[in-house]
Image 1 (spheres, rainbow, N blue to C red):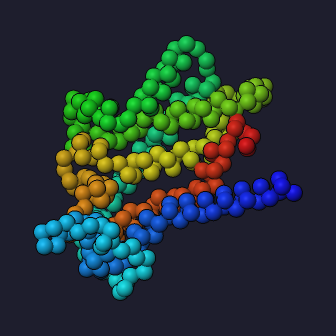
Image 2 (image 1 turned 90 degrees about the vertical axis):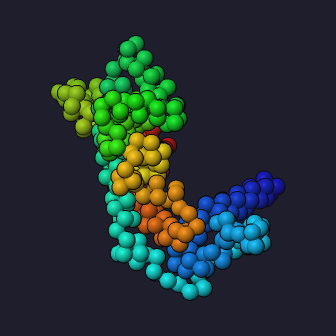
Image 3 (image 1 turned 120 degrees about the vertical axis):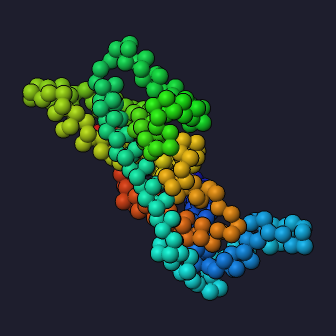
Length: 296
């Protein structure tokens, strides 16, 4: 009886904790959507202190002026009209994000599939050394490799072009490392049975490894897409032309005069990642729990 009570109390506490965490997690998204329908004056009135407004040349304390509102006093879509119809700059930057992110995601996965298959199928000292180098490169923050990438791009005259970002992104070690770990969990008996049936290496990879790694590949693709969708440092350093910058750079450089538009742009900017998550949620969970053909 006591154990049941303890279990019940624990489940209640855990449920409350999860609910509170979920609310805190989705609150910024809900506030962004709500504020995107507010007028600029209402946004300034609610977040004046956070936006650095001054009153009588003295700073206003945040605790006195900040007002988190989930329902606008007067809803308006004027900011969406500005973003989607009146000013094409935002849509151009949105498509810049797409042009940079989609090729990186697709080709990084293609490189990862071929490389990971080689790492998982053949075991020798040279391969292990190369894979160790991959791990070292993956552990380095991007800021460390940014200078070498800049020097290489400058050497090959790739600065101020999209290739300076796309090429390093395609050959990023992140996908290779994760997909190799997944492929190594595939039982050897699957490969041996395929060889007895006369399958060659290409057939083994395409008909055994890829179907078993589908969930992991979708999960990795989602992580790669979100990572490069939100990049800021690479475009700022490697591309001086503001016309080539993705929308993430604009969101990182907003000021108090553009804050109303920034909320609307932020909502538009979130749509691809939200749709991707809704579509690939099951694949993401399955990819995390995947264990060589056996679901955990």
